[in-house]
Every structure is written in structure tokens, then in C-alpha cells.
Image (cartoon, rainbow, N blue to C red; front, side, top):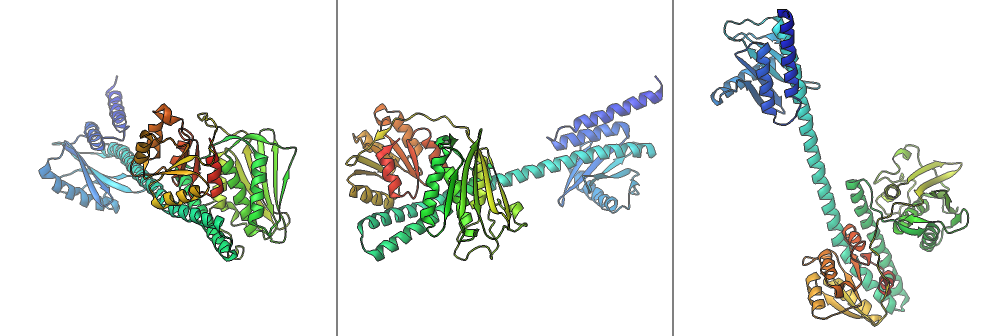
Length: 523
């Protein structure tokens, strides 16, 4: 084999070994200095050094390793050289007292450093050495650019994680600290409404309940949006259900809520449309779409809700007449905090612009999709397609327990106002009420012999929270037989608990009718 062939093989081996050294992004200093050592085998050098400029900071690499006493002087020399090569004034042979080769180190789109090779004794570098050094500089530039990208991505990931953690914390604080007072207001107002016959007081209490319900919906929307921004969707809990019953009941409620509007419902084919879905979430989809039609539709013309099933797909459409959605708004119609233009939105409409975004999240959570079309000729149509059988999580079967009036109900809640309100509400209806200030207090009463027919349990409590309380009950066969209904503002955690150890979940503030029905038929 000729000398030339041997030389080519040696160059290929060294460059390949440099590439292999720079394959991993960890331990950057060791890898860069190893690459500089290898570079000295093809570009003979007394010293090979690289100065990386990163966000105003400098990182010095050297082979052999630069002594601490020499680092300041060498960094200053290479810094001056970097300023020259970055300005395009110095590429190739340097003009300092010690002859050397110097080249810029390129990142993705900018010069990120300079590499400098001091020749070995009695060695003069030529154009061939310069070309080889340019290859090494390109390898090191690509490597350092990738390291920077990874560090930037890691920092971005940390920022996103911190932001998500803050969003979850904020949602939890908002949910708990606002829903609890609303629960007290709702319970007390409902209790007073049941007692009074004065028309002025009735109207005032009904107004208070409507506003509490509206505030609760805003809180729920914010919590749902926070969950969707973190996880990409909103949690749904499918179960066997009849789509017709869900939509019919929801439309009935909406007709009462919007008494001056005509809301039509048609179902293609003979009911029922049996399948699996999250009934509460499907109700929320229908409610949000109809409310949107009420706000933006022509008041004198009907809103049409249509339900149909074809094979394994259930289709729900909501149609309204009126001014069409502006074309510029259509591509972002399902984005959060998007609302119609002021001329399209009545002054008395209060909201956050989250309704359609939540619809989209809930539909995707079921594995479906939602689209919209809008023009002056045919009106505005939102079309939802849902799989007839959404994936259903396995749940522990629970027997039905009929809790009749005059039974004992234990209320476990750390909020005194809620305990007092619940005691008055249930006591007025003939229930015996036992109160516990937290899970530990409730467990002490149970272990002392109290055997309520039902436990109404808050989830977030400072001493023995709802989850720990349920686990303690499940370990005692006698206590495990007592049905538990979680009544909490901590939606996500409480729903998880309701699917495992508790019988049901009610979100604060809860209406009297829902509370009493849950008590009578705890499951």
C-alpha cells in the first residue's frame, strides 16, 4: 500500500473517530477536548484550543488541558481572535507572535466560537492543514449547536412544566377557594327559598341562585381549560347511556332557561340510541352549542337541534339563523377566549369565550370531531360526530343503597359554613346529621360506634383527606359497607375517587335536588 493510501486511511480513521466521539451530547467538555486531541493527529499541534461564545459567556476547551494559570491569558487571546474572525477580518493564518492556524466555528446560522492550532516545534502549517482543520471545525460546530439546542429545549421543557404546575395549582386554588363559598351561598339560598312565600324574597333568592350557578360554570370552564392545556384534552368518563335521553333532557332544561326562544329537537329514527359516553359531558356539549346559538342567533327564529345515528357514529347538529360568523374568525372558532365581534355579541352576555373550545375538547375526549359552517343563505351549523361506543373505563360494581329520610347522614368537611348549611338543609328534611371537621374526626366517630347510612365527604381537607378516609374505610369490612358520596370542588381527584372507592361524586356547589337524589339513591 502506497504512502498516499496510508495517509488517506489515517485521515479517514481520525475524522471517523472524531465523529464517533461527538455522537453523544452528554459530558460536553470531555468530548470536545478529546476531539481536539484527535485533531492534533492530522494537524500537528503543540496546542489545539477552542473558545465557545455562548450568550455573552465564554467556554474554553484545550488539548492538552489548559492549566488554570494560563486560562485567563489564553481566553483573552482567543476572545480577541474571535472578534476578528467573526468580523471576517482573520481567517486562516493568525498574525500573532506565535504562528498558528485559526478558523471560525459555525453553529446553525452564526459564528459561535473560534478554533486555534499552535504548530509543533519546527512545524509550518500549509493549505492542506487548513482544509483538515476546517473539517474538524465543522464537526465541532455541528456538535456544539446540537448541544445548545438540547439545552434550550430542556430549559423550555422546564419552563413548560413549571407553567403547567402553576396552572394546576392555580386551578385547584380557584376551584376550592371559590366553590366552597358558592356552595354555602347555594345551600343557604335554596334553604331560604324553600321556606319563604314572599314574592320579592323569592325573586331575590332565585336571582342569587342563578348568579351562583353562572359563577360556578365560569369556574368549571376555567378548571376544564386548565386541564386541557396541560393534558391536551378534558377527562371524560364513558358509561352505558342513551344519547336520545341525554339530549332530550338537556334541551328541556335549555327551553326552561331560555323561555323566550324556540328550541326544536328532532331525532332521526326510533329512539333509543344506546351506546357509551359521558352523560354529563355530552350534556355540556349540547348546552354550550345551544347557548352559543342563543347568543348569536336571530331571536325571532328557531334553534334546531338534530340527533342521528348511522352505524357506529352519532351525529349531533345545532343550527341557528342570524348574522354568519365572520370568515376571518372561522379558523380560530374553537380556540380558547375567542368571542364574536362586539356587534355580534349582546351587551348582556357574560362569558370568557371558552364554550366552543370546551366543546372541541370534550368531543375529542370522546374520540370524535366537531366542525362548523356559516353563511347568510343556510345559517350557522355546528356538527358533532361521536363514536357510538366510547372507550369505557372499568369501574368497581356498587350495589344500590336506598337511604330513606330519618336516616343518619355524616357530613365530613373542613369548612364550618358548609357543615352548618348542610346540617340545616338535611335536618329540615328529617335527616339526622353527624358532623366531622375532617377525615380523622370522622374516622374517630365511626370507630366509636357511629354507623350512618351515608357519608357526604369533602376531598381536600388538611387532616386525613377524602382519599385517605376512603382507604381507611375500605380496610374495615363494617365501614366499607357504608356508601360514600364525594361532595367536593376538587373535580379531578374526586372523580377518580368516585370511580374507585366512593359511590358517586357531586361538584360543589350542588343543587338541593341533586344532593337529595344522591342521598336517596346512593350508588
